[in-house]
Image (cartoon, rainbow, N blue to C red):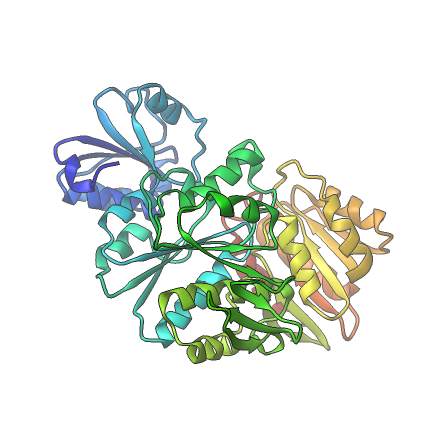
Length: 463
């Protein structure tokens, strides 16, 4: 796409009235474009509509009118979560109208160098760790994107002496064209979001767009232990810094035989960073997230001493293996952000006590059989809820578990309260109750954050 200033007097359609849609609509309006914002939800469910209307922006709620997309439209900016199969998007594609997400728009107006971080799992932890390292090093980070602030809003505030640290989803990246992060990081690839992407090939291609605009001199950080990441490395124009938990690298960040995270530079010099056991959050997957943050921070010039201090002192993000508290010698962990089975497996393997697992949620067609090995080896009991409760129950039965409960209640708050009470009844002193759903939240909850908050409240209300 062109710079947003080039759309003065031209028609721009924004699909979706969420946080990013509002920021993009205001930006194009201020730059003189003729902006129409459309959301299928009823206007009563769109609290931002009145604010945009007051600015003179056309807001259409309640449907996607057939006349919304026409030959006179120059650009469509879609909310990342809106599927490409809906009628306005299909029509725009047929008419040859460019379709982008907010990430592409923000890139064109951002004066700061961008660090883009994506992956099936670990994005939020790695992005947060990176932002904290940069903050401690006095490097003026602005953390935005799929975590926290709308990227367009943040980009308007950025100057050349900032660093824009951005968490990115495959949904956001799919709608990019010229996007070029100075440092790009791909943590891992697992099968997920296929209800949106349709195929694994489209999912991988969307993630790989993170590197498409990079040039020699830019930095690409990838997981050398991940087969998809390895397959992408030879295709990249950027300078690659790999990281590995399983092998010592000729160049990159890895876990050595003493279980210390080290960086080997291009001259072969080895720089110890921190023993893995001293990381502020547990789990081998968090060692991988830490190594990614180390590679990013070193590429940007952060001192090793600062990196090590932050990695040690940071104790996790909300809803990602978050210790809620203890009740009767049972610990309760909130891992509501685990929206796929691989994330749940990592959470289970990160903990060192018998686990009563609360799982289940939106049914995307998986049979969840990949959970069977950890159910057999690490899980003591299961409480299943949501659309997938019977599938989760079936895996628990195949694992030979005797402590299994299902929650059939449809109301979100009642369901999570019943699940916590059931898990507490199954648990014994020394156990862990872990909410790690392995599913998206949208069958009952508006977001994984709300799911996690309700879980924490239910734990606090336990007698």
